[in-house]
Image 1 (tube, rainbow, N blue to C red):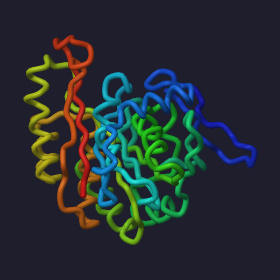
Image 2: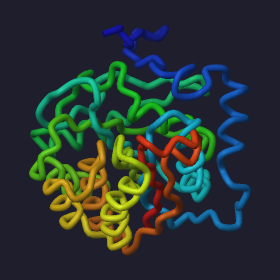
Image 3: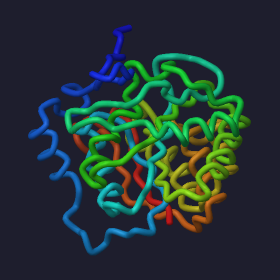
Length: 281
């Protein structure tokens, strides 16, 4: 595994962009144009009341327009910090890893880690560890950052990666986030794709179960469906955690913005991946 940790001029550890040029354009101008083309030009619909987002983390060619439908609802200056909760695709570990360095970097610039919030969460939740585990070449946090940089400008954030997505860990993380974010203007982002490698018709049937739970703002039903296999999502645990935190913070509803499968892009519906975006108020 490549070492994605570098040092800035002050000696602080930063995470370099791992999937720029693969999941999304690596050249800043092209990246900015690509994202602008995926966010609907509907500023009147943007709402400072958005508390959370559920969005996919595939390559922008496949899931970018679905993600853009949610990110277009955000308002610059509406948040003090952003919390991104993602699954680990490459490393297995127990608990939750919060990045132990100073920042993440994308082609659009550097995003500092909210060190005060990191310390508060670690103090509140003993299963959360400051670590590079799950952050190295993982794409599930990184692909959201250029969208956030585009719509929010400068911000600090907390990158969280869940290793083993047990119900206990996911619900406890949501409750801990609800506690430490209570006095902060925070945006929560859950990173997930939905079902993988079914024929398109079957994928849509499976994904409809999770979409129903998201619309119903029912984290416990979602976790049950994921555990039973009735729903599929690589980031199902992050969605459960974020929905739990949002409920603790007073959010009352979730609106599904878009659903698509990779077959909508490729035309090949024999083996697809599902993508969902939603916003919480």
